[in-house]
Amino acid sequence: MKKENKFELLEVTGNSYVRGKKYGEVKKESIDKLIKYLYEIYSDNKKSKESIMEHVRKHIPYIKEYSKEIFKELQGIADGSDKLLDEIIMIHLHEEKSGFSSHNCTTYAATGRATVNQETFIGQTWDIPENLCDNTGAFLLKERTNDSLDILSYTYAGMLSGAGMNSKGISLVWNSVPRINLQIGVPTYIIIAEILRQKKIGDALAAIFRAKRAGCFNFLISDETEIYSIEASPNDVGIFYSDSYFAHTNHFLSDSFKEKQDIEKVAKEYSASTVIRQNRINRMLREKEGNIDIKGCKDLMYDHVNHPESICRHPDSNKDKEKRIITCSSFVMSPSQKELWITNGPACENKFQKYSI
Image (cartoon, rainbow, N blue to C red; front, side, top):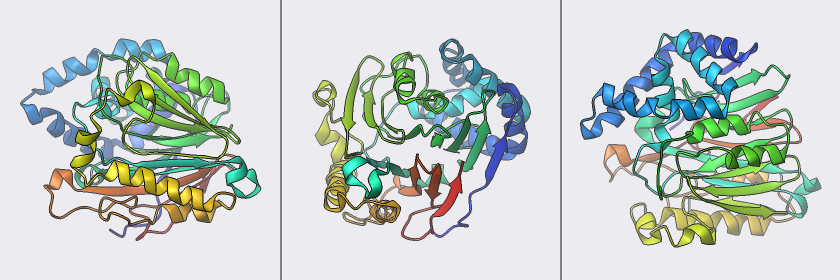
């Protein structure tokens, strides 16, 4: 799956609403395409558009209370793209759509004694259904906020942040995990956007804890020296800290969640992919410990053990089209250097390109 290597980079400045409106105007066609695709997904159980919007609107008060600035930016995106605010919220809610499979993303971070010069690195493969990959309109968004914070995000058309870093070094990658439960609240992608608006690691973690969370996730968060992994559901959290390296795939690791997930069910559909990738990425990090640099981080994302359900993920032609998973992008970030290296497609077939804040 070789692609045009370069990502489109959209830069927006001004207050929250102005940034959102410019974003919406520029990405109008891509936003329209993704919304139409998501309507099809949400309607797979015969729901009407109005019933979908009725569900989406229940989340709006929680988003507005959580971050008024993000809410203004979402309204700007809606106005700029001539879409309903509800439809822009729907884009941010697609992670909370019921159902789960164990194929989404491998994340890792390394710091301290594990790396050359004790530099911190954090990265992931972004693995999603091939159909979704073709409809996201994925691009890089660079924003400057009112208080002169620069944010560089990998994201979808109409969405604020999928993952990324900011000019204070706060960086985030993440995994889907089993939906232990879902509730009306703040969508995962809104929490991601808020984390990337924080200036210190404590505030980044607090942005998770203060949210009335709608879904379940694992966030791997770093700054220039610290690594935290936060597993969360609407009602509970599990916290890991590392002074060397840490990796995560698509099953819970913390004791508070282990008994609530059916690991056999999670693992079986995709050739135990989440278990294999978890062990494989940790083995490679352990073998590289003390010598991890930017090249070593990129090398992790070429791995094909258990192909095609490997770290470098490729569609399985034997599966139904909606279950063919692909690494839509691989990326690694250096919080100290403020650099992001990213591929447009699987790393084995597409070159890493560098972007900076």
